[in-house]
Amino acid sequence: MGDLIDRGDESAAVVDWVMARATESLLGNHEHMCLEAHQAPTSMAWQGWVANGGHKTLASYANGVVRPEHLAWMAQRPPTSIWAKNGWFMPA
Image (cartoon, rainbow, N blue to C red; front, side, top):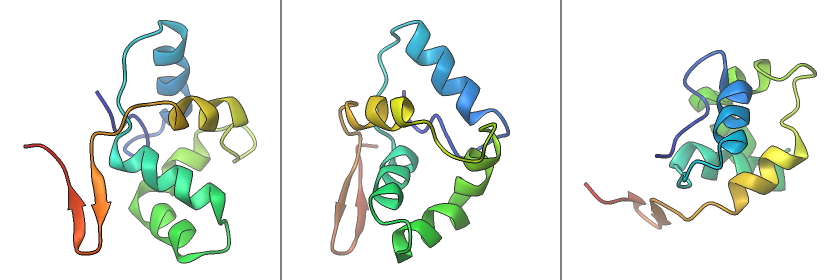
């Protein structure tokens, strides 16, 4: 499973839940966008992530900031998709 964030008001709680249970999870494209955005918070990547649901993820954290341990956990997930020049490629 991937895409744990950006689609509801409880993104932080969902990541906490999955981490606490050591549930296998893949790096969905929304986690990928989140990681890229946090590497360059003044970039188009940040704007794109926020526009694609990142605003909901940020709102789910008490201080509006994704916790570092969540970012580190996301970064360790195996990918489910690959970004290439012409768009996202993922298994169907």
